[in-house]
Image 1 (cartoon, rainbow, N blue to C red):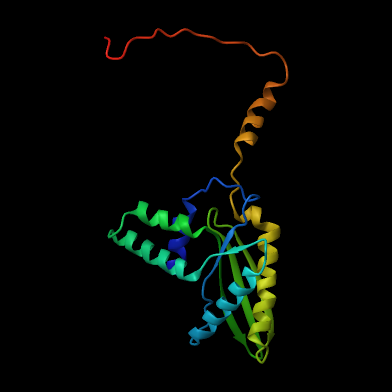
Image 2 (image 1 turned 180 degrees about the vertical axis):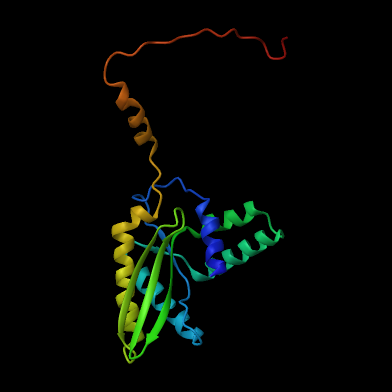
Length: 197
C-alpha cells in the first residue's frame, strides 16, 4: 500500500500536455491483497491486466516498469536519487489510473473488490465481482476486468485531468471579446547596436 501511495504522489504532480481524448489513459494494476495467499492476489492482478490490455480504449502499463518506478520513488524518498529523476521515471510509465483491490472470502462467497484511482486527482471508483468460493478465479477476474474497463471508458474524464488544447484556450479568450472591431496598438522601440551603452 505504501508503494501505491508513493506512485500516486509521484504521478499526481505530473501533468502531461496530452488531452485524454487524444490518447487512452494508462492503467496500472497492482497485486490484489489476498491475506495469507499472496500468489492468488498476483494471479488475479495478472488476469485483470491481460484482460484490460485487450480493450482498445485502454493502455495497460507493464508491471515490470511499474516495479522499477516504485524502486525509484523509494530511492527518491531516501535521498539517494533526486526527486526530479524519480519523477521522470513516473512520466515514462504513463500510468494515469491505478487499480488495486482485495480478495475477500466470506462464508461460501468469494468477492473481488477493485478500487480504480485517478493518479492526478485521487478520484476513486469501486467495483466488485462475486461468486461462490468454488467459482473460477478467471471468471471472477474477467467479470471484474470488464467492470473496470467500463468505469475507465465511461468515467475516465473524471479520473484523468484533461488538458485543454492551445486552440481551446484561444477560443476561451476570444469568446468574451465578441466579433466587433478591436483597437490596434503599435509601438516603436529604439534599436541599439550590440554592446552600445
